[in-house]
Image (cartoon, rainbow, N blue to C red; front, side, top):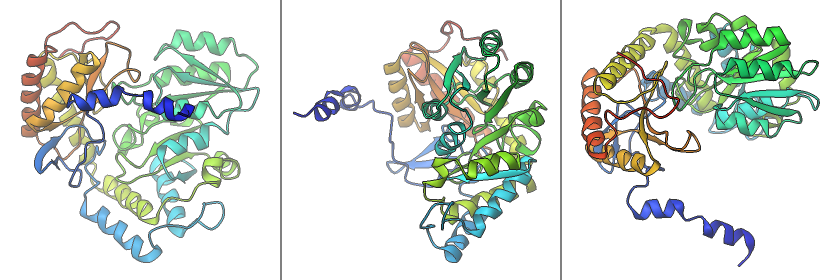
Length: 406
């Protein structure tokens, strides 16, 4: 047997979980992603979607996407650099720049690709990229494409970051940070980060995939939330969360956008995002501006769920966003909990190592504005049932995890 064939055949871990009936990935959903979804012909409450503002099934968003298909077709037949720029791409970029309150924006085909297309091209060979150890995988992979050196600092540890910035005096420095960390829902300490960046001559880019549409005035994101928007080089966002589509974008100064248009390989050598995606984003932004109560609603539900989980003696850490972790412990226990909850009518996501440290496996809950308090009560009731059965109610928190109080 050839080496690659042998290597892939040796990977048996997932098949073992499948054989045990506990495999919690690639679960097919048979409906649009609203507050409830259909799975195996059964209605299930969706407590694991990133559709924070409930717009992916909004009739106006769907109508806008259909209209764009009628006007432009289903694809673009080329890259933005050559024949794939449509008027709707430029309209979307202007809408995003206005929404974010910056000079310019640039759209990419996916959020993952946005990080690769931005980060990899801003750090020179003699430069240094600084990353939080808990940054998203797309940031980590983007760092592997950089010609410069990558240095990681301990999660939200400003003393560690300062020590490493100080040791890099005289170098070009870029700090890339998640505004909201996607597994445990905590916020980056952006005011402290930009202070250190100013002190040591570094630039900052914020990946706000889970903050745009949720945090800050009108949903502008974490930099606006903390009042430091003018002190960061730019923000990276995605369309697959609050903006009800697929794709990503960079928002910042016209100079940076112009540079990326002529250097970003992920932009120049990839087909441009379909017109329906762009039209959906444009309409989603319009609705967010018109209906700011959607943001208020998702925060009301976030606080409602946090209180219920704490009172039920779950360990949830200190989430500061609509992403709420419920700590379980071991990986296989999380798999069991996830599939038991689905049988009980609640969809949640499993998070295991290496996404979190060993022994810190968790159920990742996330909220959308279209859920009801009654649906949340039902989900907590089922979590209690499963948690008591598997023994993760009222346990001590994992080492290093602070406990939220009601």
